Length: 130
Image (cartoon, rainbow, N blue to C red):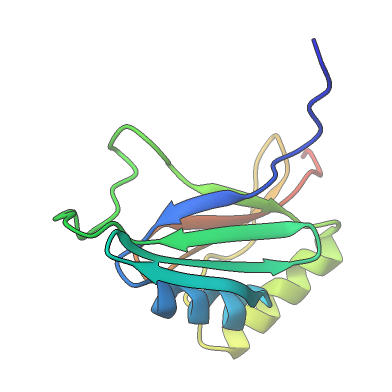
């Protein structure tokens, strides 16, 4: 197989790209690096370090809510380097008033879960198997 190292970016369809960009910038520390609008909709890209998220709406779509049970995205998970960093994320999210789970353990690692403004599940993950 040819090389394949990591994700380049993730593109999420959202109801309000500006509102979602504000959420990701405030909560995950990204910054808006690109924004454009057309008759087809709005596209905003937020990024930090090696993380890039495209947020877009699609004019004419009548789907107004995320459902992880539908075919498509169930959740998006971002790697956090250590338990201490995950604990810092939990403290930061809680202090900012962001609703999130406690840090949960699984056979694969540690998870901290939250939802974006469209109820898209976002997971912060540390690979520290129990």
